[in-house]
Each structure stands twice: as structure tokens, then as C-alpha cells.
Length: 190
Image 1 (cartoon, helix red, strand yellow):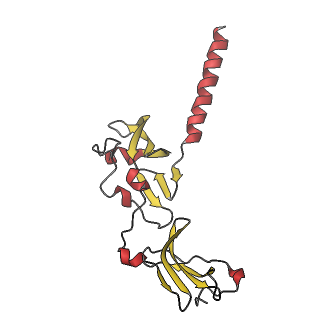
Image 2 (cartoon, helix red, strand yellow):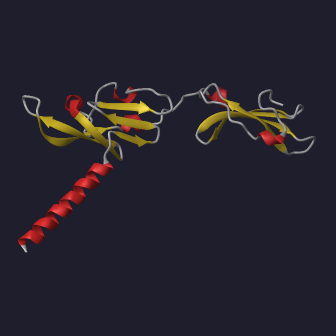
Image 3 (cartoon, one colour):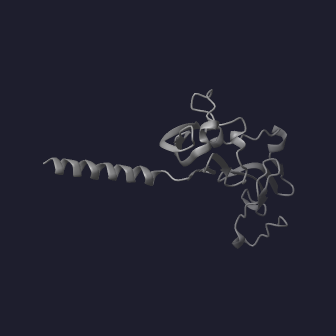
């Protein structure tokens, strides 16, 4: 009976050990953020390729006060849980021999924040020229990207159609192609 209980305990502990290893890697991704645990903790914005901008003041515990940067020198794995990175570290003795593992929690709220862009209201006022049948809407959000939309009136009707969707330089957004099948050339607004 003791052998059965011992083998059951060993099997369960092996199963849970495998699960915890499978849920943490040395790279964790959430949204545009990639965290890399490899002898430290690196944050890379996948879209801009910017590195460690959100850690410019150090790596802080969820209390926002405790700087845990010095504990991350032996970081091996990372997982993201809500606004925190859970990092596995090797615990070393005074001879720098590994004597165990532990975790360190780092607040990554600043890494996940979307930066607001402040634009003068004048930059987002729509303009219309009724005589020419032109309407310009400079601040339209499409799939998280702010673009400028230009529309042309269809003949003398009250119907308008999109003639151009493009970058809004005030938001640093790139061009968005409306639909090439409509016969309009998006590059020359017509």
C-alpha cells in the first residue's frame, strides 16, 4: 500500500511539475509587448521595436516602491498575469552556485499603457465645401488607427462616397487603403 501511495504522489508531483514548466517560457507576449527573461528582464514593443522604454526607471514590484532589478540577474522564465510579470529566477549562494529557484513579480502596467496623443482641436475639425462637393474629416479612428477621410458628393445628391483614406500626420498613422475595386486612385485623391 505504501508503494502505491508513493508512486501516486510521485506521479502527481511530476504532472504538476510538467504543467508549471509548460506555462512559463523565457518569452511572454501580451498585445504589442514581448517580455524576455534571460539573465534580466527585457521589454520590447513588437510594433516599434523599442526596448525597455517602460523600465527606464527600473523594475518595480507591484507595490510600486520596491525596485527588484538586482534580483533579475538570474532570470530564466517569464509569464504575464494581468499587469504583472512573474519571473522565475535562480537563487545562488555566496559561491554563485545554484541552490534553488524563486519568483519575482514585476509591475508591467507602464509597459501595457497606450500612449495618448494630444492634438489641438483645430487639427480635427471637419471641413466641407458644398459647392465643390468635398468633405474632409481629419480624425477618424479605424481599427485603432487615426486617419484622414476625404469624401466626394455623388452628383447633386445628398449621397457621399469615400474618395481617400490616408495617414493623419498628427497621429503618426500610416495610410489605410479604402478599396481598390472602387476605381479611385488613393494616391492622388481621385
